[in-house]
Length: 241
Image (cartoon, rainbow, N blue to C red; front, side):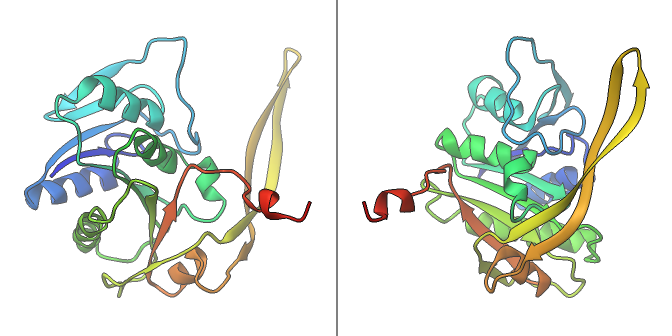
């Protein structure tokens, strides 16, 4: 299988490099086309009106000075001589579930490939994963190849690996949880009529509905959520007039 691998943590992230090597070991052709530096939380942003640098970093490895969506866009339209059978975004260092899907650059890259008609999967791991990293790569690679057999034309998969040292290849198909953050904006300094802030926060509440991605991850099971780009609120058209 011909696989395009990208992420939002950077082309040299431990997790994208390890996954690439594992997929190659299993006999697949893998090309890494990923951001030059960390581009977390850039969602589906794309760079317009300025040149984007692309630098070879090794055999079938390219660093793009842009967003994850830039990487996919340039890969599919310019860099790749052979179109991929599968686009994988990750493994992201940190979970992406609930409302994370709106902000995540990891998911943005997978969504871009899906919108262009390619099979795509985004994958993330919970912080502090105790699983042996080599074992995680092999479980992940095996899972992704199995998921690629699904008819990924009307949806793409978002996968989350839980923090569990005894994790198996067991998975559950889930729906999105409601993940809420306590928002925080801090003023750093006032200088030359400019005010400099940092944006952050911490998780305050999480909707852990039965069968949601958060529920399944908390149970130590790999969560697989089908996503699409249809943001229409369908119930609006079904309400009584």
